[in-house]
Image (cartoon, rainbow, N blue to C red; front, side):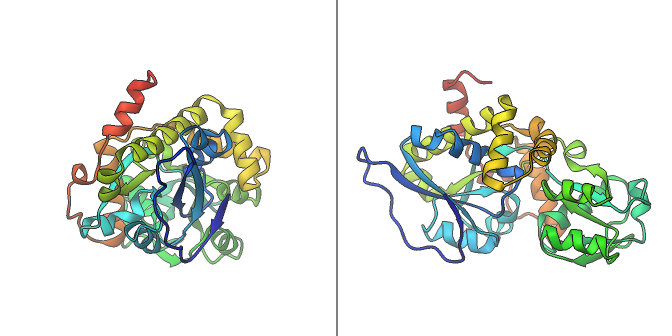
Amino acid sequence: MHVAIAFLAWFSFGSGSARAEAVRAAYPSANVQFLPAFVALEKGFYKREGLDTELISVRNAVTAVQALLGNQIHFIFSVGPQMPSIWEGADIILLAQQVGRPTFSMMVTPDIQKVTDLKGQKIGVSFGGSTFAGTKAMLELYKMNAEKDVQYVSIPGSQPKIAALQQGIIQAALLAPPSDYVALKAGFKRLANLADLFKDTSFSGLAATGKTIKEHPQFVKRMVRTIVRGVLHARDNPEDAIQTMVKHWRMEHDVAVDAYNLVKEALQPVPTEKGVELMAQWQSVALNVKPKRPVREYMDLRFVNEVMAEIGQK
């Protein structure tokens, strides 16, 4: 079961008995970048590890960090939004990856033919979020001045961005599946798929506190194994992945197929240092701050590498 919450009740770890241990893991929104976690739920991979898992939508990154540090949740699935807190010393460690490329597409009005045509246009973003970071990263990739060549309009949420496109308030916006497909059906076009532009960017994963990792290593490893199985099953069984999106996120089948095709090549459970560094760059660009810690200080790949070796994956 997954529910939206603002505040979470205190809980404790299971006693280690035969009874399944309760696990709470937070994700910001029902988005294809968290597909492996939901595939794992649908296929019973958590239960196989003795984990009674609740996937909880916590939209605000600060709230998710506070809940994690306060032992109100065990794990978070997002990577980038937590980095500013990590740079300030928050005890959060990246353990594994779900999707290793950004899942956004730049959706634009039909008259825009190429990225440089965005000069002088209004682009909808969520300030401080991944859409803002991704937009600026894309513009810089095309040698545009991300600060001066376009005008940013703060529009949090995908549906409001689509409405703003329809009303002519903006001419472009980064949208993630399934919202990008909704925009396509509404007559807008996909100018660029960021997954094609940034092919090694750690976009979603699995993270816990260093305290949890130190005190409950086998518990953490079981969760890592679950996510790895979810990633590999989603990668190797497209129809299962598509049906998971249809069931859990109520997507139309054709929407789910389009979303899956955008993300399938990025289903990789082991993050690279380069990929995490690129996500850190995204966040630093969006917030106009420099990362204060090297990524190796907040990565612990022992468990994911052990799991990959145990199940015979490279």
